[in-house]
Image (tube, rainbow, N blue to C red; front, side, top):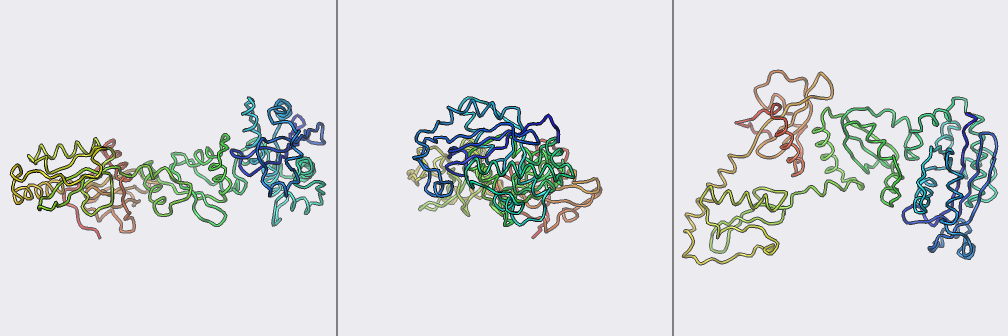
Length: 462
C-alpha cells in the first residue's frame, strides 16, 4: 500500500435512498493511513425535513435526537477539510459519495475525490460469498458491528473490513484500483470484466437489470468511452440514481457506421421500449397530409396534427414544412384551395368548411385532379440502396429504402458486383420503419450521395 495515501472511510445515514430528494441525518468520517485510524469525526445532522418512520425504525435516529443537531451547512467546512485530498472509501461507495457531493455543493464547496468501494474490493479479494452487504460480509469475516445502521458503527466496521482487504490483497487490486479507478466509477452490480470487454468502435450498447430485462439502449461512436461517460460526474436526480442502481449487466453490438448504430438503436428501442429510453419519443412526426371525402363527394386534402390513419399521405416534422408541401401541390396542379385545409392552431379541428357549390369545379373534374396528384406522388416516391462500410474489411453494411420507407438494413459479404436488390437484401433484415428512422436515412443519403444507388424499378420483396 502506498504510504502517502490517506483514506477517508465514510458512512452516512439519510432520510431516503436518493440524494436528490433525501438528506443526511448522520455522518462519520474515519481518516486511515493504510495501517490505522489517525482521525475521527462524527456528527448527527438536522435534515430540515421529516424522517420516514421506516428509516427511524431502521436507524434508531428520531426527530427528537436531531432537534438540536447542526444543519449540514454548519459542519460543511469541517467535512470538506477532512475529505479534501483523501481517497474516499465506503461500502457501496456511490451512495455515500453522491449525498456528500450534493450537500457540500449546496454549502458552497466544489469537491471530488478518487473512490474505492469495499463491496467491489471484497468481491475480488474475498470471492465466493453469497452476499456482500456490510452485515453479511462482516459476519463472514468475523467483524463485529457494535451499532448497525448508525454511521459510526458502520464506519468502524468498514475500517476493519478495509484493513483485512489490505492484508489479504495478494494480487494488488487496491493499487490497480487507485491507479485506474475506472472500476469504482461503475455501478455496484456491474463487473469490471464486462466493461473491459467493450470495444472502442461504433455500435450500440445495452444495459440490463438483475433479471436480464433491457432497461436502456444507446448508440456510440466509441462504445467503451460512451458507456463510461454514463457514470462520470455526479447527477443526484432520482431518475439517474434509479437508472444507475438498476444496471447489472451490459451487452454491445458493433455497427461499422454511425448510421447503422442509429438504426440498430432505434429498432431495439421500438422492440423493447426500455424504461429509461425516452428521447426517441420526441422524434415522432408532428403533422400529416391526409385526404378524406366530404358529404358532397369532393376528395379533400388537409394538414393536421399527426395521427395514424389509413388516409395519411405524408408525414412532416413542422407545420410550416407541411403547409409548404401542400401549397406546392396547389400551384403545380392548379388545385382549388377552397377544397383543402392548411394547418394553423386556430383550425386544429379542421371542420368541413362549406363553400358555395357554384364556385367549385364539378366533383368528377376535381376528383380526377386528385387522382392525378396521388399518381404523381406515388411516382415520386424514392427507392435506393445505400452501401457503406461494414464491421470489418470482409463485409459491407446496406440500407434499402423502398418507396419512401426504410424497408431493410443489415450486413452482407463484401459487395463488388450486383445487378439486383435481391443480390444484397436479406428477408431477415426487414424492419418496421418509422418517421425518425426514415429521416436519418434520407439525411445521410443527402450527405453522402456517392454511397447511394438509385433504384428505378424496384422488385417486390415480401
